[in-house]
Structure formats: C-alpha cells, structure tokens
Amino acid sequence: MDHSTINHQTGQTAIVVGGSLAGLMTGIALAREGLETIILEKAGKDRPSGGGLQVDGSLFDFNKTERLLKKLASGGSKRSLQLWSSIEYRLRTEAESYAGMDIRYNTRVQSADQDDASAWVITGDGETIYGDILIGADGHRSMVRGYVNPHKPHASFAGYTVWQASIKETDLPKAKRPRKSNGYTMLNSFSGFVFGSITEIEDDSSDSGNRQIGIAWYDHVRNDWLRRLGAVEGSVVHHSLKGSELPEELLHDLSKEASERWSDPWLTAALHGINTRTIVGVPIKEYVPDNLVSGRMALVGDAAHAPAPITASGFNASLQDAVELGKCAAKGIQGRAAIDALNEYESKRLDTVRQMVQSGQHMGRVFGL
Ligand SMILES: Cc1cc2nc3c(=O)[nH]c(=O)nc-3n(C[C@H](O)[C@H](O)[C@H](O)COP(=O)(O)OP(=O)(O)OC[C@H]3O[C@@H](n4cnc5c(N)ncnc54)[C@H](O)[C@@H]3O)c2cc1C
Image (cartoon, rainbow, N blue to C red):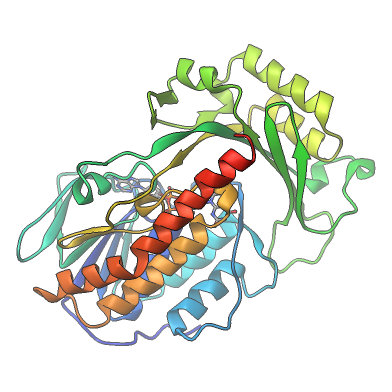
C-alpha cells in the first residue's frame, strides 16, 4: 500500500468531525495531500456494527486516491457487497499509517466556529482545536451542518423504517443453509419489501459457512411506533430503535408478518433478530443540501447528503466527496486558499449529490413507501 503523501504542506491542518466511513476516507484523502489531519470521533474505536454495503470496486479510475479508497472499500475483491465492519477496519488501518494523522476516539465535538484566519472546534473535555479547514463527516444528525446551513440543519424522516437483522450461516441448521451464492434477493411483505443478503464475513475466506445472512426490511406501516418510542418527532429522526427497547407487542407483530410471508434462510434470520432482540429499526432520513460549504467549513458523507438506502449510493458518494475534497485541497488551504478550495469542492459535488438524494425520494414513491 502506498503510504506516501503526494504534496508536503506541513503546518496546514484539517479537522474532520466524525471518524466513520466518510470521515476516515476524507482523512486519508487530505493526509495524502500532505495536510496534518485530526479526526475526532465520539464513539470508541471498536464499536459493533453489522450491515452490508454495496461498494463500487472498479479500479479503472485515473485518480490515485480514488483507486486507493476503492481498493480499501472492496478489499481488492470483485465482490461489491462488503460488511461495514470490514470496510471500517481497512480504512482505519490505512488512516492510522499516515504520519500526519491524529485520530481521537471517545472525543465528542460540542461546538464549532470560524473567523478569517481559522476554524475550530470545542470538544466535550473543553479542549479547543484549531485548523485551516473544518470538515463535518458527522452523519445524518450532523452538528457541523447547523453551522454550514443554519436555515436547514436537519435531515427529514422519509416516512419509513428499515428493520435490520442477521444471523451467521454457521448458526443455521445445515438443512437451512442457503445454496445460493453471495448477493441480494428481493422479497415482498405486507408492509413494504425486503432485501435479503448473503455476505462473506472474512474477505479472504472462501470457506462456505463463513457467511452472514441478513435482511433489510423496508416498512412503512409501523410509523406510529417510531413516534410513540420517541425515535421520530415531527419530521426529525432522533434515534434508531434497538431490539432491547422494542415492546413485546411490536416484536410479536414483526414476527407474525415475517412468518406469514417469507421462507428460509430469510425467515430464520428475521426471527433470530427478533428473538434475540438484536434486530434494529432505522428510521430513514433524507437530506437534499442547498449548499455544502460555508467559509472554512464543509460537509461530506451523510452529513452533506443523506440518501435513502435503497439508492445504495451513500457510501460511494461519500468516497467521491473525499476524493474531490482531496483534489481541491491539494492546491493549499492556508489563508484565503482554504475558501477557494472549499468553494471549488462545492461546485464539483453539489448538483450530483442533490440528484442522488432526489432519486432516492423518487424510488421510495415507486416502491410504494
Ligand atoms: C440501512 C442502511 C443501509 C445502507 N446501505 C448502503 C449501501 O448499500 N450502499 C451505500 O453506498 N450506502 C449505504 N448506506 C449509507 C452508508 O452507510 C453511508 O452513506 C456511509 O457509511 C457514510 O456514512 P457517514 O460516515 O457519512 O456517516 P455515519 O456512519 O453516520 O458516521 C458519522 C460519524 O460521526 C460521529 N459523530 C457524530 N457526531 C459527532 C460529534 N459531535 N463529535 C464527534 N463525532 C461525531 C458518529 O459517531 C459517527 O461515527 C446505508 C445506510 C443505511 C442506514
């Protein structure tokens, strides 16, 4: 792996708020341009996560950073479906290898601000950290977005939920293990539809049995529960619903619908999630940005543009954000150059990402959600 940086701009610093996939990719892209990069992530280093992502692993691109990020995302394999945790591990390992990179976990950013000379954040511990630019990679409930676009700070509830559940293939009785190869299957339900997925757990493994069977159940009929449980208020999504907090009545209802509609392995994966309360309900949110930049602050990833997951494009768009930001920052970010670089980034990305989120809204309507 190429760990060298492209330019050397010692003394120029980028702060990235959020160290998930978009934050790590942005950190890597900026570090490769020689910037000192500080990534601040409120979660711990080893957080659990399960879902699978469709990754564009084509390596025919001209830009070196784009090729590197796609290689890390896909694990160098041709499989487009990758586990979130595998992608995160590869990106984090790469990011940690840059000399100018400082990744701080368990560090929540409380507030941010900027003036003519710099941008800064104040952390939960009261520390003030200064940089030439400040990038919000802090997800769909972005705090930085409130500074970049104070008139439109929140993503909106799209009107449906995705219930996610999974089981390891080895936990299924042999007779119920799928003979199918990895990939997606679409199933109908009363309440919407389901994507069943079969994903390799270890990228390098070719052992059958080392796979994860998952369901992503798009449901538009249980929105009352979201409101009753405080996950959604008005059009604002506050949080996802963990299995441990779901009432028995709701679990019973989910289990009944799954049993009536699906066969194995999808049914067993759904019932496993319900019975072990590992199922998670994610209320879907969307954000169509009016702008991506304000002065020395910019947004990337879901903070910039939260598309419905049916577009399967949020991750790939986050990768393109990182690549474009790296290219724009390559010319330098000191003084006024920071503002020029970020404005150029916005002009390259805004129309594309607006169309991506709008296409998800259209798909939601087509699928009856
Ligand atoms: C159900 C589902 C399925 C999906 N499927 C696909 C798919 O198939 N293909 C695809 O391309 N995309 C998919 N996506 C979207 C994709 O996962 C995201 O677009 C991508 O991972 C980028 O996320 P992110 O890093 O911008 O945000 P997040 O993953 O939300 O990360 C934001 C990070 O910021 C941190 N943070 C937040 N606030 C603060 C703070 N104040 N201080 C410090 N840290 C903070 C959080 O802890 C978090 O780690 C899916 C999304 C969902 C919900």
